Image (cartoon, rainbow, N blue to C red):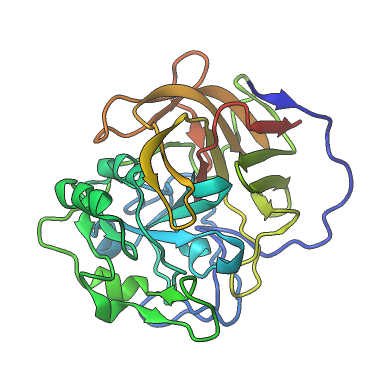
Length: 354
């Protein structure tokens, strides 16, 4: 059940420059990658309503033809308090937030149209990742270890193993951070191991044309959304609409969610996909049960786009099928071209702020 609370009032006092694909971190290098040492403004969104060249399947924006032909790279990134701030999240086309042990969450960052010179901290795989990424047409999968059962699942899955055990030369430890929250990589390095049989991803979402507003017939105004991942601890996530930038500014645990360059996470779209979790029968080092999100089937979905929310359903018929997001009439929900964050909370853990 989705709860609705009163509109939040007040003025947001810090608005980062956000446009186009997503926020950038640091100075852009010749290979299109970025560093995490300083922040610069991203390229402007094209004013034309119809792209004239290739369109990125994960963002709906124009893409370099060379990048359009490469596969997706999925990087597992930690979100425990000691893992923050993270590097590379603002360069991802799509980020999926899943619950792991005890109410802590972890990210699966999907890179295709952009690169990140530094990405991490990279952490271990979970069985949820298999169902989430199997629809991506043999994506590279970067992670830092897994238990034997999950490792065997990866070996049998349509994911291409790009983990630290396979390519240790592409990973490094950051001495200023405590282990295990200090392992980082780079997307150019990981993309250098693309196998010949890996191809570009399918289109994950239906997008509106650039500059087209959300359909008022199916979407209602929304100031934001609150999402909870609660168990032994609470990970509280908030998104608030910022009309000046056309983005949903993310906070967690009561503070703006900043990357290593000090830029706030702010995607164009937020998809809340309510999912049940099952106990895998495994525990982590602290003894907490390891859950798995049930992503095959259907359930409630909320899509936040263009300052509005569309209430609908998600549907995924098999691990290899692309998840559909449908409105009350059964039509695909259309998103704003740009980056998207997908939240996977348990049912009843979402509050819409109208």
